Image (tube, rainbow, N blue to C red):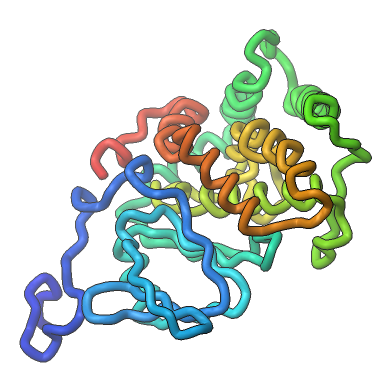
Length: 299
């Protein structure tokens, strides 16, 4: 077989740029995500193109994107998946309006070093609780968590989140009857709950893509367990207060009783950019696990 880094005459129209770890942009250098629905992703010459339901064509700068969120009515070719994976751009499948998170495509990692570290920490009961304690300490900066069990810290977190809902309800003048979400019945929730569900799912998509791209596993958690993406949920709790909870209450009155997915997506994306989330993820994972993330330094 010919060397894929050298284009042959018969394959001159195909994308054959050899991608190395050094040439990949870091997560922090990328744009958070693009949400697409009702269209098709294909390869045209050397780029990925999006063809919407009205036959409009948009070329996507895949190498500069952290994640593609594919909503209902989307399809993607085999060649497009290959090129997107080579560019270290994540692909997540989500639901309409709410951006309900369904699944993510795992991009190939250069090695399993980070995942092995994650596994070792998770398998050691003492070290696993230490990681969880560092995660909780981010939310309880003034509390002494020394000696606290995982169950005790989870109880503290539950109380904190309920208090956050009440505080934001008072801050924005929004009535709050409690967190409510039924899978497949998104429209049954009130506006605040709908925005919470949508922004949570978008955050899970971004984090899933980032975790995969850095060679960690979203399935090995330290606080959450028995769920599809424990590590992603662990990390999401570090950022939800501003990106999801405050956002949901702040948008409730603005939308005047009618949920608008474009308003929610734009507002969430703006907060992700303003908080520089993608620059924080790699450092936060490194800090929470208590390790030096050599992979991110070399990418």
